[in-house]
Amino acid sequence: MWGIGILLVLGTIIQFIISDISVLNVVLMIISVLFLISTLPFVAKLLVKLGFKGYFKIIIPIALILIYLVAGAIFFPFKEEKEVSSSYNKAMKLLSQKEYEKADKIFSEIEAKYPQDDQILLGKALLYMNMKNYDQAWNYLSRAYQVNPYNININYNMALSSYHRGNKQDALKRFEDIISINSRFLRPRLYAGTINMELGDYPAAIYQLNEAKIISPDSLEVHYNLAKAHYSIMEYGEAKISFEKALTLNPPKEIEDSIKNVLAKISTYLGGDKGV
Image 1 (cartoon, one colour):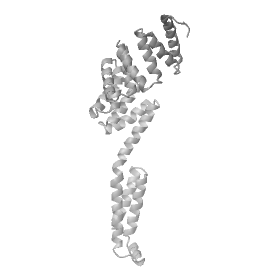
Image 2 (tube, one colour; image 1 turned 90 degrees about the vertical axis):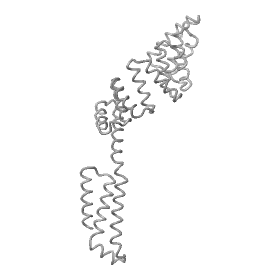
Image 3 (spheres, rainbow, N blue to C red; image 1 turned 120 degrees about the vertical axis):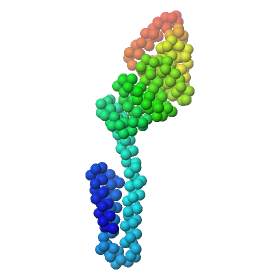
Image 4 (cartoon, rainbow, N blue to C red; image 1 turned 135 degrees about the vertical axis):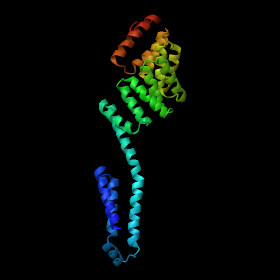
């Protein structure tokens, strides 16, 4: 049996060379060495001298080989999955750092191995969204949707991609579908309100933005867009309230100046003080 021990040790050494020095490989090496030692003739004689029964020279190697096989069976199937997860996380980190070329390289490598993984396809789509390549993003999102049509992140980004591609009606329908599934999802409400406003349906825009205000009462985007919707249909009182609320939410200087200019006009329309 010591020959089997030599093969196990050699096999584990090869695993070190072609793979990496992982905790599992170290454990397997230790088990291999112990197995080899336990099968050597002088060790069997030593065990007998120490008071162990003769059958221990068979039980110990069998126990060690079983531990070796169980350890390999339990941990090795997850190794590739962990490597893919690690690569995916690395690509997403690079994406957040705007290292688009590096992220693309990693995404392409794991996509080649798992072309039907919806999360990898979504990650690649997000990469193209950040690069403002919305047509390519749409292609990847469509593939991801075919794999997992119930993933809300895929559906949300399809709506967003459709909007940026200029298909506002399709985007609006997709955002409304998401709202019907999760009414507390803020961004679809905001986009639904914005798109309705762009399409000239101000009552629908005001409805969606008021719902968004319930979800996020201190959102600058919500109050600013709600104010613009009211202002567009000459509801100056409601517009004034929302614009003034937006001013308290630390808007960028450009938006702050715009709000103050509009409030000055509203004061004129309402017959009040022209100053702000």
